[in-house]
Image (cartoon, each protein chain N blue to C red):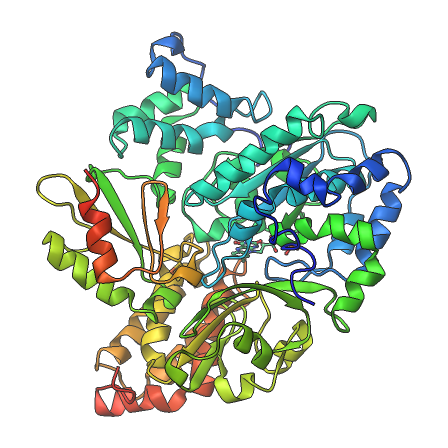
Amino acid sequence: MANEVCLRNNDLERPWLLEQYQSRGGYEQLKRILAGEITPAQVIDEVKAANLRGRGGAGFPTGMKWSFISREAPGQKYVVCNSDEGEPGTFKDRDILRYNPHQLIEGMIIAGYAIGATRGYNYIRGEFWEPYMRFQGAIDEAREAGLLGENILGSGFDFDLHVHLGGGAYVCGEETALLESIEGKKGQPRFKPPFPAHFGLYGRPTIINNTESLCSIPVIIEKGGKWFSEIGVANSGGSKLFSISGNINKPGVYEIPMGTPFAELLEMAGGMRDGRKCKAVIPGGSSSPVIPGEQMLDLTMDYDSIQGAGSMLGSGAVIVMDDTNCMVRVLERMSYFYYEESCGQCTPCREGTGWLYRVVSRIENGQGRPEDLELLEDVTRKIAGRTICALGDAAAMPVQGMLKHFRDEFEYHIEHKRCKVGA
Amino acid sequence: MGFKNAPMTTVKPVEGKENLFSPEVRAEIDSWIAKYPEQWRQSAVMAALRIVQDANGGYLTEALMDQVAAYLDMPAIAVYEVATFYSMYELKPVGRHKVCVCTNVSCMVNGSDKIVDHMEQKLGIKLGETTEDGRYTLKEVECLGACGGAPMFQIGTKYYENLTPELVDSILDGLE
Ligand SMILES: Cc1cc2nc3c(=O)[nH]c(=O)nc-3n(C[C@H](O)[C@H](O)[C@H](O)COP(=O)(O)O)c2cc1C
Ligand code: FES
């Protein structure tokens, strides 16, 4: 039961070509929909039945998000795809862009049809030049074939699609910062409400979804929401792409059913390198709190299981670390990231991320003070929940997770001015 | 269109846009302008800055940013804001080859430090510096979304993954 949805054409030689995609039934669902076999309301119902939760990190139900927009509302509406892929540890959307771009395009057109939008943008991070060229090639092919543009396949429905390239800013993965960025501004998140469904791109109703969410849509329409939902487990429908990296033998992107035991995923990924012990796992991108290896080996990869262990499934980016890694050093690097990437708009995040980085850094460098761990915890409490976007929480949670599970390493650093692990 | 959301085009369009940039650069910027609604020329600012930067050997000057502002009917300050916000724009000269090396967690636990040390020694510069002959700049970057191939770096538009010191040598020596 692997590679059933987003990576289902990976066995083809050049799956990114239109003709190859069509040899597997590509664009057939769009044709059925445009022919009137499936109504917009039915599309949304299937997506709801699929129990598809947003793959960008927050896990919001996709069908519900789409139903916030009234198809009949007059004026321009937009579909925006989030291919910013900035969460450290995540590298799955890159594979969708490289190997299955047409399925993403088909998903975006179907989304546009469901909410009555005639224009879409895919926001691709600027560093992804090669994936961008692949995706742009697919857009050109689809337009040439009459699958994009005006009056698609003679149906009277128009939908056009463009790429917007990012410029290197993690915060632009946050949906409203991303919209600001498309509008030609620096990417500072907007206050919500109003939500993008009411006031989105250029002030118009907009749905914004992750690449993997939108790429799943054609398969959900083809095989039915129920089929998709049943691949997974309660509360976590479908299969999911996991980007697994770290001290393992076969890092990569694996598409497996939600609810698969972590131990199985680790085995697929070739197990621990040099047979070392799995010390710690960051289960859902660097913003998700770390989980000790032993505990992780008993968990399954779905929203409820990971949440039950005090962390988050997030974007499905699994970073596996063996026992040669010092957790203080790992946290220092992560805290630097949030400090570097805070957009500076909200004081608790702008100042707090600097505090977190400096204090962890002094502990790592043998200048920690006994009161520092409480200071860190205090700072995290003063950031979390007090900012416009979730970057603040994303900076606070990894610190809280590390102090909860690996406090002894921090204490050892402070007391002995050196590392317990010897790293 | 709400107040907060109106384009920042408070400036009077300049005359003689055809005298800005080369015809090729203009054509490329125009192809991006065409992707956005008519009154939103400024949506093309990120692409315009990238195109102009590439045509200028990898970095932006104030004069170039002013020209982008004029071309897109934007206040200059709005263009500076964008150019300073995003990490891919360079406001100082860089080497012919900008080596963007990732040191985030997955790369770090796979030895990106060794790669950085190796390059610093080989080139005789630190991260953030450019070699005297102007060939290489070393830049530390955040996760580039290729952690499955850690450690990795990007040069130009290309990703190089699963780096080892030997591989780094052959890549760097192979560039002009
Ligand atoms: C700081 C920050 C960075 C984010 N980065 C990304 C990203 O790179 N890709 C992504 O799809 N979502 C990212 N998100 C989540 C988006 O805000 C949004 O929830 C998501 O794109 C919605 O799509 P989905 O419902 O399909 O997941 C980020 C959120 C925050 C707060
Ligand atoms: S951590 Fe280096 S590419 Fe992701």
